[in-house]
Length: 308
Ligand code: MEV
Image 1 (cartoon, rainbow, N blue to C red):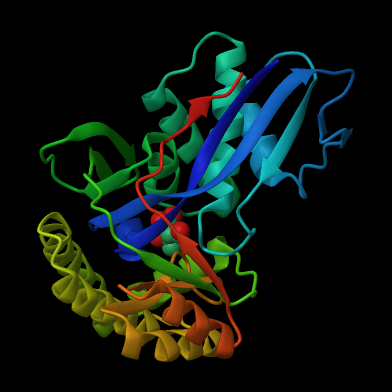
Image 2 (image 1 turned 180 degrees about the vertical axis):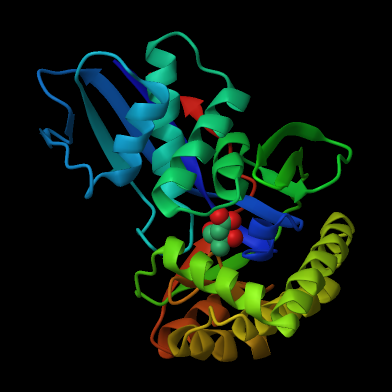
């Protein structure tokens, strides 16, 4: 048997634009998914027969990283599914890693590349941001150019994403979970069709790319005020791309007076928002009063690891 665990993530800046090859910065969070693979008489998940549609990520992980006799995959998750906090990336990365470890082939770059192929197959369109962040942990800067701290490069179609290590300062974030499950694939497809037909949407994608690089600088200087402003601007641009939601908006509006900045994180359409603040208790209360579930997260968590 092999067991591996991988962290969830929050995208600080750059979601959606990164699918078009623009930069993004994502931080690993202290919520994990743990997956174990063991011999079995049939392909199964948590002891029940595997269903390709219901267990889409695990089934695609088997195609990418296994190719051996039947196994059972046991998963334990601390990350709400469809919350924008990287549950599908963490389940994919932990499964791929456990399968590779049981064949004696565990290595971070290979896990990241195979896990991206899994997300791409299931979602139809994706960037490697979530899976590479869950694999490397700490923080990841995604960029079309090679920068300091280079980890690995992933290419697909016309896009190439260079992954880099990002030092993560001690910052406090409150996640506000709307409780609304939002599937990433249709949201990414919606942005793609808007960008293909609308000049303003294309401009927004370019502007998000600029915001990310300013944000990386603000993060390295621990300039929370500037980072908060950039988070706010990014949020408005994402709303303009049609991935906002009224429930998310209520949480963002509630958190902002007590925060440096607040924005949706991940695919949007529900899911979660994040607030950067020095007062996590007050922001948590404000999010709860506005109908959300506050989760105080610490960032910079360890990437995928063997737990067996
Ligand atoms: C989802 O967490 C992030 C998106 O940018 C999609 C992706 O990068 O694959 C919306």
